[in-house]
Length: 358
Image (cartoon, rainbow, N blue to C red):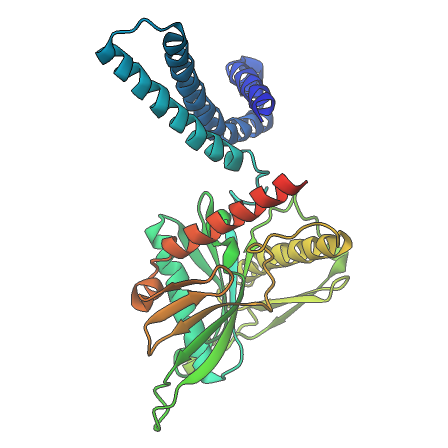
């Protein structure tokens, strides 16, 4: 591990020098790439510096204790330094192992979130709206921006489907474990007998891909226009501004009718299409590498039931890590960090275990 850290530190110093080279500064693409790598390496190099400082203190204390001849009070101070610095080294070494885990190349990207009502009809559509509200409130808590890409509302204020982007540094790293089936258990307002109903909503979290990252041949696209429409007359107009794009090689279909402008709807639809094509490519790669270990938390399978929201008990349970919290209202108001941090920790533990077995 420490040989690897020494290499990282050398690379970090070399990048630092390059960033001061006027020729590099004038080359925007190279400068941007180097700055990104420099920024990614900084936490690791700083933590390695903490380890080095603790090790120097440990070595100094050990040498003094080995040489002996210390007065009682001073010896006690040195022994305390010896113990403290050894504990620091052990703690920092564990943190360094986590920082050395391979980074997800998409962690820094913006995300596209797609929420669809599943089993449960109108009740599922209403809960889709609750999840949409939860994620947008979470985005605001984190200082992220968000934008609706497409929506298909229902008469009672729910969503058959809603797609939106969340823009901010590290958005994908925070939200990537939200993909899957979210189950709600509650008494619907329309239920006269007071019976608890179970409904499901599917969430997909996709990294937003740039045009250069996913190339799409225009000849592979079938683009249709139609008049947008919505519940209660929303978004209805007389022009064919809504867009439906079919990617012929994959059969992926994307619709967008949120904007009045056909051009804007097409732009938003292409954003979603790029991310869905990328997701399909990733799934095919994972299927091809069947022997590759897939982490317990991060499979991102949309058909997997990942979480239950039980209103009568005020309970939210994440089934992947066995975490249950009795504060459903706060969570649905966007207070998701405790769940997300626990999922990230579980994913790191699984990857550490996998790396230790190799």
